[in-house]
Length: 93
Ligand SMILES: [Zn+2]
Image (cartoon, rainbow, N blue to C red; front, side):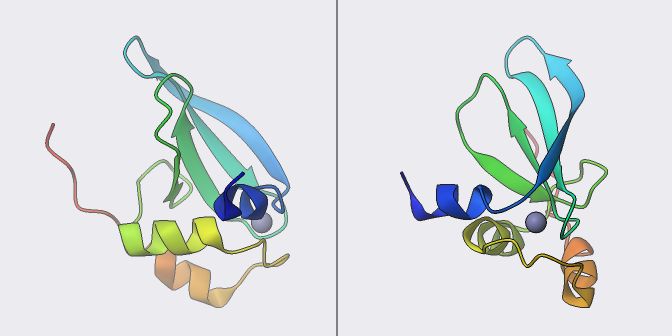
């Protein structure tokens, strides 16, 4: 198991389905009850999780990889509010 998997397990997530597509499966949003950080992942495509601002907009890769590698801070951090403003540029697919 990777290091980020162990960090993932330190959060206390509630999980909600955001939407669904045939290609990617359900888009799930994981929101931590303790620190308020939110992550998304698809159920069918196994390309991991990424950080979101809580309403499904992806954050910059730098924020995403940092949040994924850190253990749960166990409380809301004011710095996270700044991180949440660093939205990823829309990707044209
Ligand atoms: Zn947490």
